[in-house]
Amino acid sequence: MPPKKPGLSEFELFRMLLTNMINMSHPLVKLANAIDWTRFDAAWGKFYHEKKGRPGLPTRLMAGLHLLKHMHGLSDEEVCARWEENPYWQYFCGEEYFRLSLVFDRSSMTRWRGRIGPDELELMLAETLRVAMASGALSPQACERITVDTTVQTKAVAHPTDAHLLLRAMEHVCRLARKHGLKLRQSFLRLGREARREVARLIHGKGHKQALRHLRKMRTWLGRLTRDVGRKVEALGEDGADVAAAFAETLALAEKVRTQQAKDRNKVYALHAPEVECIAKGKARTRYEFGVKTSIAVTNGRAKGGQFILGMHALPGNPFDGHTLCGQIAQVERITGIKVTRAYVDRGYKGHGHKGKAEVYISHTRGIASPTIKRELRRRNAIEPIIGHTKADGLLERNHLKGAAGDAINAILVAAGHNLRLLIAWFAALLRAICCLWLVPQPALAR
Image 1 (tube, one colour):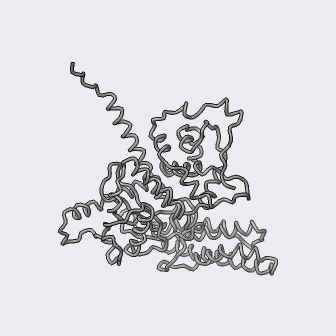
Image 2 (cartoon, one colour):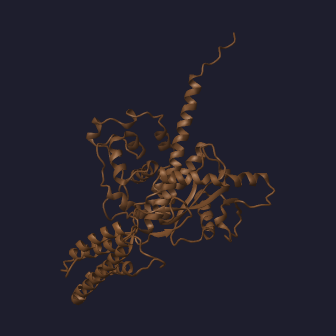
Image 3 (cartoon, helix red, strand yellow):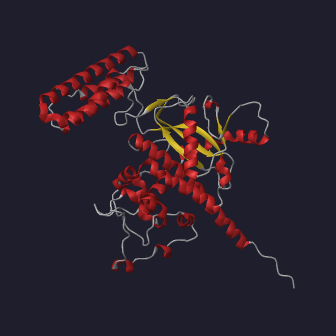
């Protein structure tokens, strides 16, 4: 059922209003009052049935928690814990009275994200840009000239060595066998853990050949384990159709881990996140990154409130940068409602083939006569600090959300969180300016 606003109970008469506890001039309060929360209710009401099920959680509460989470770079558990002790956060999420505990479990945030989906969550990014334009931090003309680049949204996975993946495959198969009551001939877990320790000790020293022998043994043990499970599942016959379906994906991943070679394509780098890709961006400090390529678009000129992110989305499959430009420009125009006239990119976008109305300028291009375009092209490098902020202050560096949908959701919410940090700084600067005007002594009136 759609979310319902709770009525005033007798107990509320003995509780203090949040408006009497907090400073109404606080930047977070100003930001909460500037956001059009009814816009979310109108857009996401279609995901609730009018009569079936229990009433859903308030949309402002769930949207506010996700905005606070990505504004401060917190996990679901941390944002729920801080919400209980911070009256400003409770006011931002639409509470009228101070609450001592949350009205839902932390897992409700996961289910809510999955219900709304990445496409609909773009509305949160669009709302942050609307607030920026309404408050004067961002001008509509700044959205016409953008800078586009790609980065890697790394996944929360361990470094994928062969020994680590083989042991994890054994653990996944054995865990699933215990869950369904299959009695294995041998689990090989003790031998696998000992072999992994030996590989880690010997692989980079003089015992390299000995480490490779341990790896071959681990592959043999994993093959024996998967064949044993396959025979047990086949013995169940038609009664074990559900068990066979439960084992199908795990056994396929385990077999792929066992047989994959160093130069194979579409390798498995994590058993719990098979969508992870190995991406090389040419960094000296990090040769390979494991996650998904992500495109980001920011304003080219420095607005009053800073450089806002106009669009961000995940790019599964590690496509060529030039092939992603059309989609990124289309996302910016869809979110802002403003046509892009110029896009500035680096040399990785050569051969982009963009045929839209927006003019594309590649860095280090000679023969440009316009001084304005030259100046804006020099500002293309300003997107690099923005990417650094999304990774250091946001959650782009280590994404914990599951699957390809989690990658897309995390990317769009990271962009919204970055814009909110700029808006908080903008409202704080406005408050300081107003205070300075009040404190400056006024000249005496002439008699």
